[in-house]
Length: 308
Image 1 (cartoon, rainbow, N blue to C red):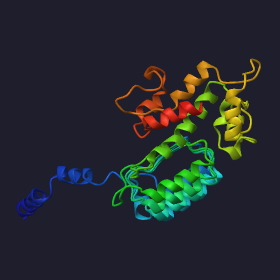
Image 2: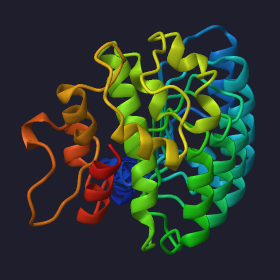
Image 3: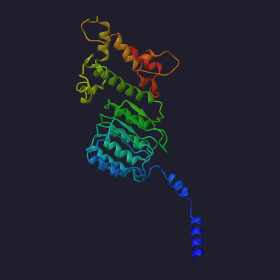
């Protein structure tokens, strides 16, 4: 009887699955499991933990409830504005989630980089983000590349971003797929913001004349706190006044742009074609040279030169 029982135990052990099969099964589980949930992140923020960068790439909790997760996260980040970089790649974010993020951007002025790559945001969601960026003075870069199931952003989306950049002077980079023949107009506005911050970094207060007309009298504090404003041209003159000014004899004591400033202003007008650029390539900002979305035609450069 003892021998029979021993043989039965040996047979049962022999028929059990091998231990390596269990480890292989665990290894093939999605990498999203085990990541912190939105609720746990909110608790960490409420406890006083300061997170400079929050990365929720491929988070399973966000993928199951994207809009609700963004609403919960946005409410927490509004009260605890310590996060400067927010990465939400592969989170299944839709237009409703983008609307929650847009409402968050309208109130939060701390976030500087927002990565929404590989999601499900269409033109509707992109427009909601633009509406939030109208009142935003903190975000510098937004990434909306590779949106699944959505075609390239079109004319309506471009127009809303043009309107947004009429007041927003802090956004310096947009990564997306835009299908429009008028994209160069948006590129000019982005390049304007890049040049404004380049002058501020150099300690030059003559950025005021690059601001939109309605912001020149009272520039935003986000600019004046970093560099005191100094207007070179004063209020914008009429076309007839500009013509008379060209014919008049220049005053040596008046403030004007010298050759070095003119050369620097041309640097902010990049274009990519077979003709010679308006300024040496080595003097152009690195961000402008590497971003092929900044594109101008030769006619625009000639027009800019004549205006200056």
